Image (tube, rainbow, N blue to C red; front, side, top):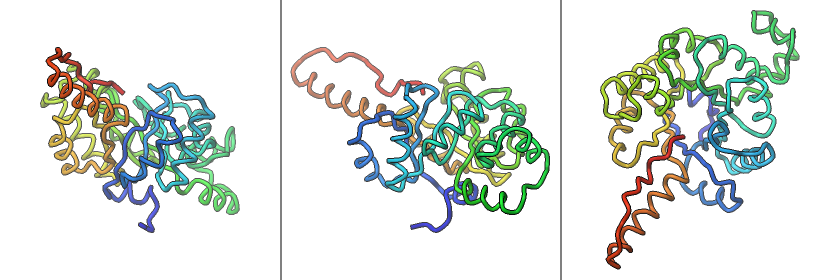
Length: 273
């Protein structure tokens, strides 16, 4: 087992592999762990998950050695604390567009449970008491904070956003980013590719992890590999629901063709998350 912590591996640029998990079935974790992944991504922004169910998923995957990273549904430090209290190891904050948003989230992820005026003072440079500093390091040393970079505004503020001390990585939200660029789902558009590569290069130049949630489909595996070669080390690929639909569609297409039935042109990969 790698002795370095997940945050250390992420910042060092070590390839870390994970997928989005939608299914809360108790039968699912024992199968997912067989994939040999480093982390699982659990999304509460676009997936309806109750707090208790989310906690169960985080605790279960954590016990199996998979690092659970939760995307909260807005960049709110209180939501980050709720997810961490439930067992999450990492937080992805959606639609980050300012360094101030990151600063508040650093307070939640790196200094939990300190709040209020004391936290504000620490974020402004006040050193915590030695005992408190040791406690916070032990309690939060393995927690990561990742900013979702998914808009033109976030790219314009990218250097300032990625310079906030305590941030561990940047994760590109491809669907929202393509829409913000005015080229929705044009994954082959050079404008989109240039934006992706700029974000990856900027994050890695600052010693932060970088990644993109690749849900474009199997036709884009080579593109995904090219982004990995460009420095994307948080390899967040596909989702359980996408993989299941892709496999079932392929098999049912085969069976329907064999029986002479019409095959509907459903795009099983086209799920925006």
